Length: 236
Ligand SMILES: *Cc1c(COP(=O)(O)O)cnc(C)c1O
Image 1 (cartoon, helix red, strand yellow):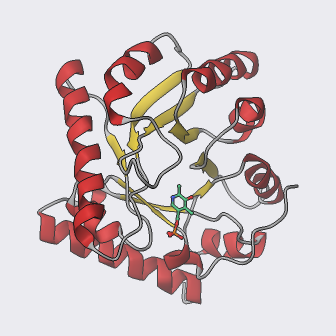
Image 2: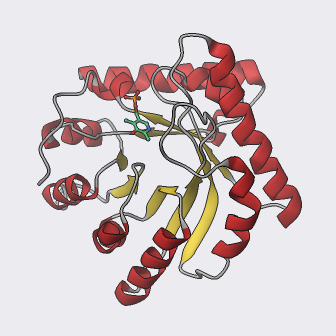
């Protein structure tokens, strides 16, 4: 592969590998999740040609449209990373097999219900608000013990870990503080449960090397793989 996208993807993978080496980590512990929101189907086709098989999207209708458009091209899977309203649970379950933005029991109940109806299962990561001042979404960290215990009632949902969006800052210290907070909470859950919680989804184009240094297992990369985002497509 020698297209521009393939080169950007390789460059990201190399930077992840270098960050892993600096942190004494095995780079197989970190997956690069390309975030294709607002990108046209042609860009996703280029990414498929470069070897991508899973894409992250933040809106259900856009994900469904792209999944349908690409249905013939390869064996693709879809992750939702954006806030999900309960009335969109049906389409989310129909098209995605991973949701990284679980943030309420109401949503968990709606997803469980749809998984039962559609005979599906869903991997879930709990979105945590690690930057109280700036982020609108995610659970307050202190709610995690109770929330994760209550999740056990939803047997179609497979809790895999935690996700966060760090505060945007050119200064690495407050960003690292968000990542370290998420990592510390994951450790607390692992101690309580005697393991589990394999995923820590943190790091985007601007901050993924720092996230890898702080223990990320999934970096969510949009612009560094696809280039600048076009103007968002209107709701389909
Ligand atoms: C858009 C988005 C990303 C990717 O952002 P980039 O800065 O383009 O890499 C990652 N995570 C979430 C939740 C997003 O909405």
